[in-house]
Image (cartoon, rainbow, N blue to C red; front, side, top):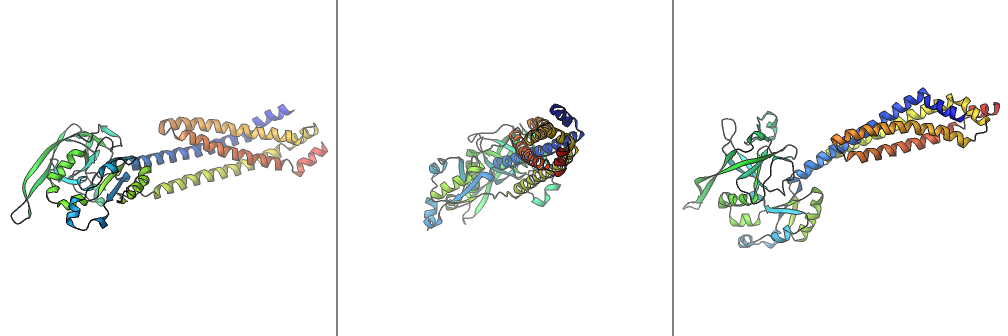
Length: 402
């Protein structure tokens, strides 16, 4: 009789509905987790690959600099700065990001580009082509969506970009004016320097929040170019006390590096402020979807289990009459819940694992963990519900009449 009722339970059409319900629930939960994990991964990677996002700007304590002579003689302790854990480079902020003319100038583009301090350690983002090391000369890595001109942010949608991939292996000239002081002590242009650069790689500038007109060049060469160009205009005291860019290997280590720089006596501030509002909003939406899905699934499954137990009242009464205890009967119907949820759990996770392999393998463990927690919660609550249903008076009276 027990085997007959179990077989009957498994063939119950309501079970098919519950299997589909749990399958949809687990798939929706898993796909929400996959989306969240993939989106979080992309945002974190974008922030971490962004050089400005993991740059700390430091400046000297001006209380120790009273005169211009103090400023000229001031020197940053590069050895101590570079020996801080997780610091991969430090250099004067002035030498990175300066604007230069280029041979890309034509009737549409004004040819202005910015050159930033680059090296294979600093450039953690994916690059088509290759990266340069700090010592390399006359090479640069430029944006995929390249716009060699000055522009305003509200003009971006209407800009006509150059596909940087078409420039890999090509050479462009970078030019800047040469200055000298005249008899009156004013800076005057006395010539122009032209340096050929080969574009050896391109990067996705939109992914890492970089400008459309910025390329990366070897750091050592940028020092020389600055001294040859703007270094002739700016007074020595200005360069000596200007801020430094301290590049950190990972965003999560920025606060630790800032704390150690403060202990060395430097004033610190992040180069850019990262807004995690979008991340929090996505997180709240995903949590909301999972919670609402779980509650609806629990409610609908409880409703159907209630109908299912009532539908099985005669079978339950018959089992009572044959001498089965209430605990044994609870187990029979509890196993049916396990059977239904188990099928939904296995199929949904199988589908989710396959999807995760193509999108983000880190999602697999979170999918399994999420559906396991939700599945256990639904099983326990439905078990308690079954126990309550088996105490119904209608079932008790059938038991007595049998």
